[in-house]
Image 1: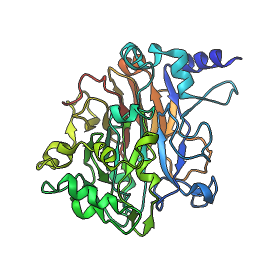
Image 2: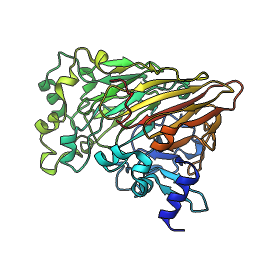
Image 3: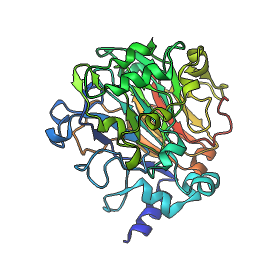
Image 4: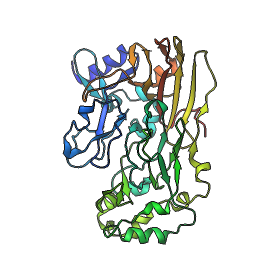
Length: 398
């Protein structure tokens, strides 16, 4: 059977619900938080030169930007197919099925599924960095990167070494003060977070981070719905004792701008960075959705932006419900087990690298609109699912 036929057979046989394989991503910097439900022996599954595995990606049709040693398909989600055909990328499913999978609006506007999500799992704070806006990213052939954060209690039994996140700069900081620090990037520890402000992370809540805002994520595992991009510029040269070369700062600048501090400073959206009411503007406490059936509840956990959205769905023990959404989405189980559509679904406890799982799915727009039957098979625990959407869910709080 050819790939096209296998894609359509898998889609139709499973009523528009696709089961995805786990996608684990190494990073060559920092220290892993070890909360990804990955076997302890597998955190260096791709070799020590690649660094430890620190992220798991969901519903991804893009490659991660991960250096010359990365595999050609690193970061891409794969769909488990029927009929002995192995796995096929979600990107190939989107290309083959188009609007039948993700809806006419997303196909017409973007030509593909335009977002992905991840678990971000670092034991130490990450470096102070900024994601490029769409204009700056286009100059190096990439997309801008807005992103949202949510801190699921189920995956955060310990807080890591620094459960605080820096956002922007203190309102009294000037561009000249930041530029002076960057001037010394290769000379000393510039301690740029001395100019920033940190907020202690509160489990069960989140933030929205627009492109152009500098930030240094804290050490809780974070669920991160984001746009189809993996592009940043690192403004902190030493973090938790680890030294970062200047190419971390300028690697996403045009070749004639890599030594231009004025250009590097222009990557910052200055007004957003020094917003005196930053938390009021970008903090995202959960918002309860209207109850549509007994036995389950949903909360918006990412909202208030033009790109991405997410919900947390909780189904009580022993309950069987039908959950509807007017848009395609991906999802990941974080607690419990049961039935998800026609699948036996269960939260992963310990995965080997390369192993299949029953905790991640992608739901087509027609299947989501018709409604997914979900049953919690536990007598004691809730079934909790995180659902990530693009920007076409009409009920997303503004």
